[in-house]
Amino acid sequence: MRLDRFLSETTDLTRSLAKRALARGEVTVNDERESKAARHLKDDDRVAWQDVPLALVGLRHLMLHKPVGVECTARRGLYPRAVDLIELPNADRLQPVGRLDVETTGLLLLTDDGQWSHRVTSPRRRCAKVYRATLARALEGEAAEQAIQRVVDGLLLEGEDKPTQPAELKMLGPKEARLTVHEGRYHQVRRMFAALGNHVDALHRESVGELTLDASLAPGEWRTLSDEEVALF
Ligand code: URA
Image (cartoon, rainbow, N blue to C red; front, side):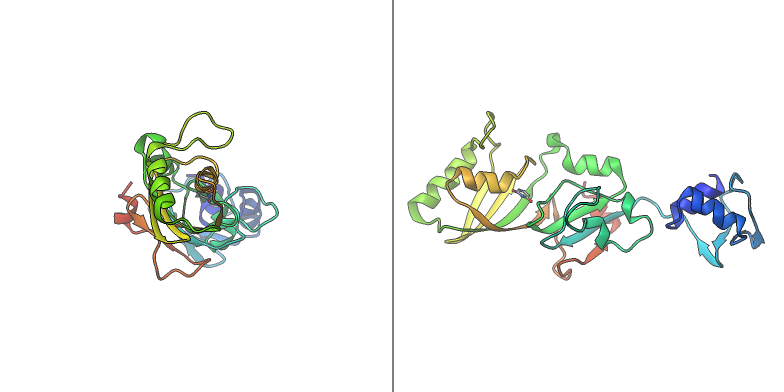
């Protein structure tokens, strides 16, 4: 790998800023000052910038407890982005795995591993996503039984002509529901409850596949996934 590329992958420097750091004599390779951006590094070369040793990190896989008021987009917009909460070099290269609405809280996966992301989100894998919803109107008794069956049968969402795939609804209280879906349509959970004549006041994702949000993470906190967790997908 070229030295300027190595610097841009291991620090927050862009390729052109890396070239300037090289020109200023801030970079050493094997303890010798190096200024050539095009130098090809060998596997055992030791690189340091401003006397800090640098090492390539592999692909990164994280879970974030997404708080309310954070967007899952790549571009900067009205709200802070999920990647803005990740204080790692080159956090901008991380992509949310699927999306949660600005108001939705809970488990958000982020990665720079495109193939892994694809495995998690691929519709063919029918990965279960579990949401906890707080409803505006109580859903009890016979009405709850009917809603549970309609969710199994599939609901027609507004503006669509294909019903949702079988999903599971469990009422935890008159206004508290747990919904498990195996697809990822736009605003799916909110629209499913709208199709049932209700409204979601608050939505929280508890798990994706076999990965459950770490209870020790407060909203806005994140951690790296273990190798075992990455291998779940
Ligand atoms: N379904 C929704 O309606 N919103 C989300 O954020 C996720 C699933």
